Image (tube, rainbow, N blue to C red; front, side, top):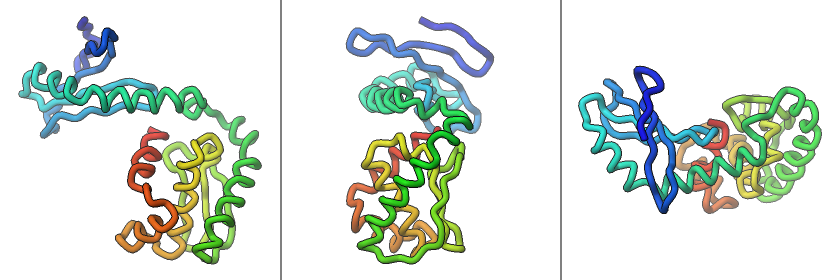
Length: 195
């Protein structure tokens, strides 16, 4: 099935295990290679270089379909949690519990790291999960409350380690790895959660 929705995108479907999976395909003059992106809403976008035949890009998507389905399941879980639909009222409702959670986890992991910090603050941010300021303040997005515990722990440790290493150097990641050995996979998952 093919349906034009605007000048830049064409909506299509790909069939896998007797199921039709919708996706958008677009041609880009700037694109140098094929790219698959999946939005937090579950929309799949296939971008190809302008002069590349659609069939080449579609074959690429077919080869990556298992990966696509895995990501779709991930975003489906997030949508079930309601992360993509939160409002300012939700922030007011949940920020106290989020602060309690973050404080407990910072104290737990800091039993090992023994780093000094000033304040823990809970923010309502659209595109960031957390930050660590030069004044040694730890800031966390209140939506941490709704993440799986493995991602909560990774996020807590990530910002905690910035107290010692205010960068993403090898020394920083080595510090994170001490308590979060699978940090690479968790980092990838966390980056996708607010897209």
